[in-house]
Image (cartoon, rainbow, N blue to C red; front, top):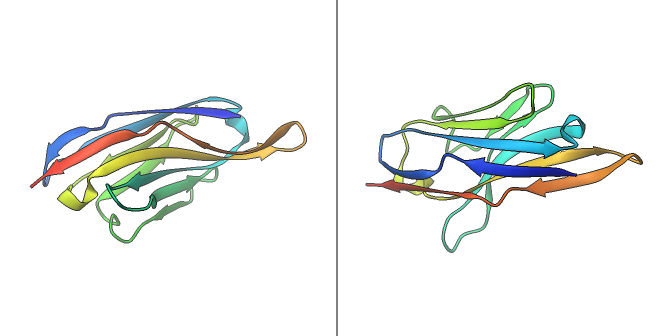
Length: 120
């Protein structure tokens, strides 16, 4: 299993920037992909960006060109958010999927979330 802890959220004005961090611990070398998701009040959780262990990235159309996902050798992942808009407001969750059965059961782990608020 993998444990995830997010940090870096906060309040920022429209047009500003924030950098979210996700620290992973546990069976980190069995992680296949990590990602960021967000949930706005009254809405479903949605994908923001993902990155595979091979470095392949994927972004929601709404954040392309503004957000950048990255990771380091210790499997921590980051989300650099530029040109923020009020519609980017929400709780941002870190996610990790992986496992190596039978030694490490397959997992789909989530962090506790960090609040991002963008004021207009």
